[in-house]
Picture 1: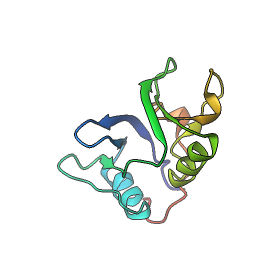
Picture 2: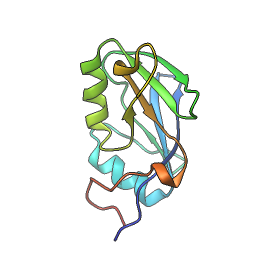
Picture 3: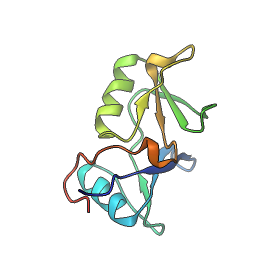
Picture 4: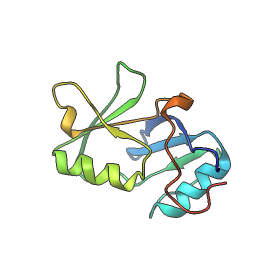
Amino acid sequence: MYPKPLVVRSFLYVEDNRPVLVFDTTQHAEAFKNAFQGAEIYDHKEHVFLPTPKGLVLVYGANSGETAYMFHTSQQAKDWLTRLQGCGEISPTGLHHTRTVLVGKGGPEHATEPVWPGVA
């Protein structure tokens, strides 16, 4: 069984408003980058820079420790979640929970099964 990939945290790169996912290993980051069109890795090999998702309106720290990405519509949130390939979840609570994606809980209990090729 392969180790589960884990996004330990996420943040917004302010220079061009791109989401960044920080993975637990460089191998998981590289595998995710290879499966996500437009993703890039620079100096920090665990950091994967993503294109700004369509409809992104607001980014904030959620009370439960994740980074919350809020969208104009629920469909835009679902579309981005699909592109994240298991590395996030729709917020279960809150005023705009159906259009908010939570990423980067940071604990092994929140890791997902690998869904992209090349995860070792």
